[in-house]
Length: 396
Image (tube, rainbow, N blue to C red):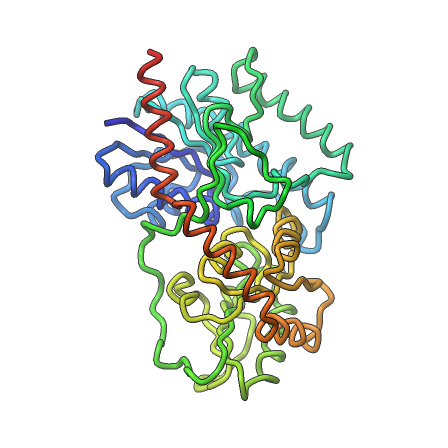
């Protein structure tokens, strides 16, 4: 039996993939614990009996600095690092160290954006694996941004001086021991890196608590079905876009039914609507089994979950890694990209018609679905972590 400490940021899209892996490890008799700045969120996603060690740190929606919703491109990327990821690492580090001292893990599993996990593990001499819940870092996210790339390198070096091992050399985003990527080269494309310690495991969908209820009887088997979602972190920016989606779906009500996730409750939709159902939250995985297409923000988890089910996409990236992931979808032939801030209902509708009727998009989505399911998901990730723990035990 080995012990695994999962270090995650307080972000649903980063915790969910790790939950499936942690569940697999626990089912095999291993000890599992978590370190996070939002223990309640981890317990909601991983189960109320999860062992969670609290860490200080900024929590989305609660930190003092709010990101302007219209921030885009390089400015948005720098803002994310300067005002969230780097302060999060500094704030979490003492709690991660305390969790490691108390739990005594054999392996630390550090989310790619929870730098404290990697650097504290390095300082303590513990083997650590990277949980890469987005593949943007592997496809030239900083190409054409040399000043941003240089600033990031300096910032990470300063972070290591403060909380890591000064003699260390590994980039905290990329473990030299084990790098688990929750995607496959079929989606990432030819830039996907290859090395013996890099493993593409595809989406990790297992081990999550049941989602909210849903009126399944509402679905009309005679019409194509479309899910519209902007994820869990974009309620502040999505009102206009969701309204345009609502119009586009209603214009196609004779042949399409739409389900819109509206956590901000910005859409006034009367009850009894047979064409569009608007809910504050939906059981996304269960719903995707019945969807013919997905309209989304190109969040990595949503994209991968849609493609796991073979559903082509209309992607409207907002910020962060989303433009890179959207580019992967389009380059793979599995969807159409629109401009989040400017697209209107007519353009959205045309894009939706394309992915619903063009066989090439559905064929590309099916090809990625096959690759995802062959990659092994949470089961394969757990096996690779067991192997790392075995190697670590042998070297002691």
